Length: 461
Image (tube, rainbow, N blue to C red; front, side):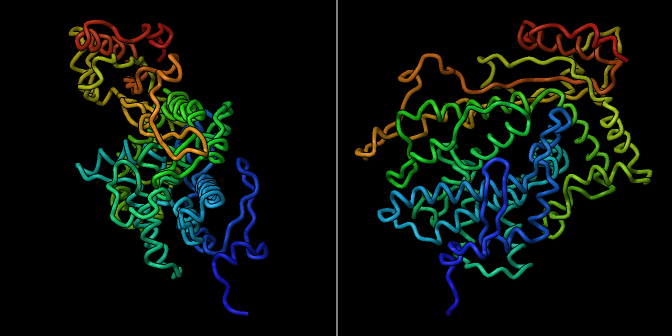
């Protein structure tokens, strides 16, 4: 009996690892993927909570990027298997293509830092002096590191495609090697229209973990999608299902990911990391995978239990979080639609400069501002305009669909920008709230917030 191929091994239940996932049920992992999973670099994902600090508000949201990655691996395989079942011959889908897509799904988040996107978007921009860092690029570096460190036998060309599939978002320019079977690059990180199995998994998983209902059913799209002109297309009758995908994602951003109290805690953690950065060299570890993989959510606990004098300010902030002595949310407003195009992020300095003379003197370090952008993945554009639809399986013609051809109840605007202001000290809530109102009057000629800051909050000390 000779050496068996990957295709033969994938069909042999004796060598498959069986994992029961609370979202997708039974997941089976083939030997090739176990070589990556059973490394300390991938196992690190167990120590990264998928939703950053949302569990401080939604106690059930303690799931990790480890289980999400397994879920994306499984759905990536399901997606390409479905396409192969119906169009495998005409599209020349080989077993190596399936393996490549599944590996991209498995490893797409291996470059994430602690506390999810808040580390990347809040902390790092304050310490990197203009240097651009993103977790997709680190994922690419981490994959190379894992392969070299653990002597994983995988072809150079396949590895290259895996990395390209992970970075195949709208922020990255497709390379020449992506021209052939380009539809495969839309499965894990879809830069063309935003429909991918990464979203399929986290929307359902996050909704369930937070105890929220989820009426988006990705299975319908998975079962009916079709490749036409080297692009994954969808039936016209599934338009509203796709709209529900983007609407559910936006709703999760508003109610969970950017919840006012979740953001307060993230702002406090960001400040704690900033104060600890020089001592612990946190930002210096983001360039080399050999150091980066050692960084996870436990950095907070490390600070909390330390006795080092230089970490005292960071420890005090973490203690405040434990005791629920949070930065106080004062108020918020949604940026008017006609001001969105030229909107510049509001800063603590803007609020300080809006305070009236004669009262409490506010300083920039007394205030935290969160500028929250929520969209349907394409900023102020409708992502559904990028999607190609087909009439039925007897037709190869594709076409876009305008919202008003489907329903007049669908949104006419596709982005929100919400500005929230926080007082770092409870006794300054009144002064910060007043300055925030003055800022709105000065900027827009009116108060854009819905109502005044509650008196009870102002009296809290």
